[in-house]
Amino acid sequence: MSFTWPLALLGLFIVPLLALGYVWQLRRRRKNAVVYSNVALVRTAIPARSRWRRHVPVALLLGSVATLGFAAARPRVSETVPLGRTSIILTLDVSRSMCSTDVTPNRMSAAQAAAKAFVADQPKGTRIGLVAFAGFAQEVVQPTTNKSDLVNAIDSLTTGRGTVIGAATLRALDAIAEVNPDVQPVGNAPASTPTSSGSTTPSTPTSTPAKSDYVPDIIVLLTDGANTRGISPVAAAQQAADRHVRIYTIGFGTTQLAPIVCTRAQLGSDAFGEDPNFQFPAGAGPGPGGGRFRQIDEPTLQKVADITGGAYYHAEDAGQLRDVFLKLPRRVVLQHERHEISSWFVGIGAMLALAGIGLSLLWNRSP
Image (tube, rainbow, N blue to C red; front, side, top):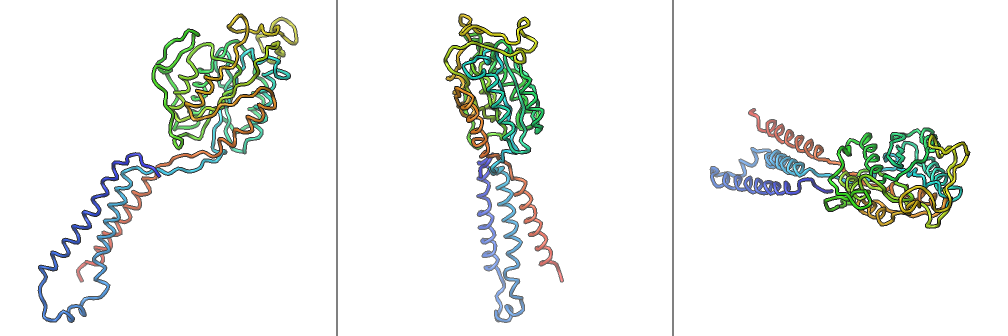
């Protein structure tokens, strides 16, 4: 158990002070009591239970004060949240380099297969959303429990130019905010400064929430490259950390230069000519750096995971990627969510006060 306002617990010191005041008042009454010649006669006239009856209302009122003082500190308890109450936002890189054939048949096809297997493996009731990003980020499917819609959307993904990892993270955060009122929408991007690569970095130090403060919803971000424009992944990760949302990052692909071969379906409306497959020569894919696609920016992906309390994974082939996706539920299922229970103590305190007052009126009414 933890407290939002722990200093309010200092108010509990009033309870023993009130108890001492009550005892002092009883002793004072004894000193001023009338002296009877026959004490046994007085004891016989007074019922035995009246000796403790007069203390019960006071004890109940003291218990009420203690309980209300405890409630003032706003106690919270942590409970394990099942995976079925989690929203998972799959955030998939669909930049043209995902057509690289260093992974059979290409990275895009392997990622789609692993993502579909991940969706199929989730317990009934788990909400999953889909965000795709290349030169811009788009929410393809809002968090839903309809697995068929998700599978169809994953199959229909097409590639584009660019890699906006930071913008995709912000879009995924907004997707979580749609279903979780405890997560605020991103709104404006945080203050940042340009870098030589055209991306941005945060202008303020980063911080990581306490382990027990995370919301149950997570972002799973898969990419095979590095951010090429817009807000930096680290700055976007800080936005996630501020909202207590964890990000699990996956770097997919090898360092081996291979032809980039996109199927017509993967090219979509951006297809080149009438060829059923478009192929870039080995090492000559689109993107900065002399025409070669960027390699995985593992240090940044690791930092994004560290800032948000997630984890970073690397996969070099389809089998490893499937294994990574299979590990994710085991990491996500044992989460903790905090709930404030001050209302419980307010209710108990009110009942104790009413009981004390009621018994006092009942037992001390005039005959």
